[in-house]
Image (cartoon, rainbow, N blue to C red; front, side, top):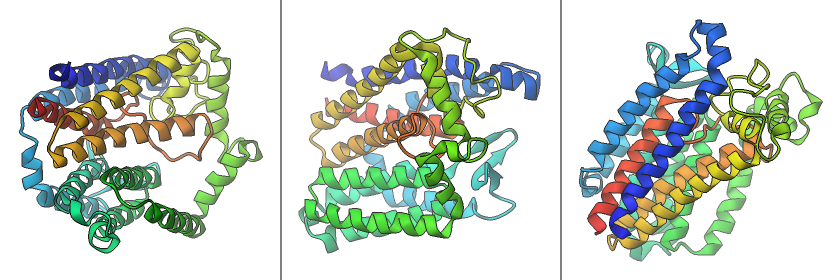
Amino acid sequence: MKKNLGLYLFFTAIILILFGLIMIYSASSIWAMYKFSDSFKYVKQQGLFILVGIILVLIISKIDYRIYYKNATKIFFSCIVLLILVLIPGIGSVRNGSRSWFGIGSFGIQPSEFAKIGLIILTSKYLSKSNKFVKNIKKGVIPILSVLFLVFGLIMLQPDFGTGMIIVVSIIAMLFIAGVNMKFFIGLGLIGVIGIIILIVIAPYRMDRITSFIDPWSDPLGTGFQIIQSLYAIGPGGLLGMGFLKSRQKQFYLPEPQTDFIFSIISEEFGILGVVIISSLFILLLLFGIKIALNTKDNFAKLLSFGLIFQMLIQAVMNLMVVIGLIPVTGVTLPFLSYGGSSLLVSMVAIGIIMNISKNSN
């Protein structure tokens, strides 16, 4: 069993990816035909990223994870350079109101996605080296938080609040696992609430999102439009759904349903059964990742595995909470399932790293 955990993790991810590709076609075919006269436009592009992702997994799963320990600082500063470059007009491109992309033809790469892994590698190295200081806030926690706020600040300049929150929650989860005093999290929570209030005050559009979250019908054609259309998709799904390709909301009601709101279309076409299957696959990913982490005696590998798998699950949970209206719209994709090359490639890189840890722990 231990020997095959990495493969189980990989095949679970592949099942999610292939189902995601099918659902990207279902969700985007009408929109792609209207916009590009090619109903397979998004499927072709995602298929290319899937191929690259599988190749990456095969390569990275054979690279000894200890190389990330040795080069953690270089990897992290490379991510910082990319986060700075993307903010420069003419280098970074604006999409959906955020300057967070490097445009390459019709493709786009988000450096913030790669910063997720870079920061987790650096944090894993620091916590594994400074384990004796982890209960000391000044020596064990403040240095990590300083680096975290640097990354968060650069991402908020784009701005990309969703990705920023995923990174923050992931690092806090790693600090918790490392054994940081619980009193610290209470103080950090209070600081976080104040910080979120400040971010809302300085950017009125975030207040609009909060308002539309509380009462989306107060502005049904504006800020509340996406949530309302998402709920209209989920509502009729029932136990078994309306059937594959039979979604109504993808027909120009739910904007670009192949990305952030693909789970709404899954719920509409496959109902509660589809929701249970997808949720079960994500739970399996979490269980395999945790077992791999627990099986290794290397503290760096343990923290790295936890950090990478938690990051993916935190992102998935945030996406699902947005789709069903539990939190405001954040622009976060559903790992492995949503259309998007950067998100998919980063998730595949994470799977490859964890597979190598699994191999070496045996």
